[in-house]
Length: 125
Image 1: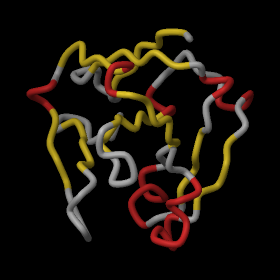
Image 2: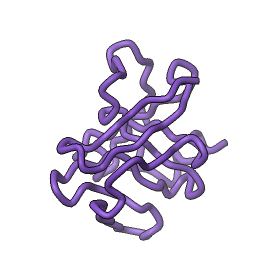
Image 3: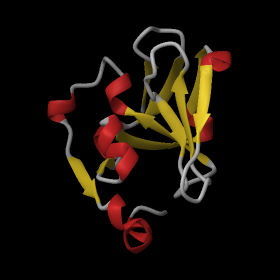
């Protein structure tokens, strides 16, 4: 386990996440919002996530079932993390917002979010 510092683009929203990136499933979802955001998913326990700054800068977007809490910086618009519908008790961190991570060195699994209902059981614990 290692602790990583992450942020949105402008730095107004900052956080830390503790995870074993090499032994955690990283997902690339093709649903309508993740595809547009370029979100790479690292789902962690809430206890592994800590807000450092900018909670007041976050804005929330919900769509479809309204269960997922998509959070973004009100200043730069980047989506550094959110509360996923698949794991409402966890935090889903966008690996692209952790500058210390070498994305080329990771094994990334595809997730068929366009067919979410049929695919979600494959990622639930």
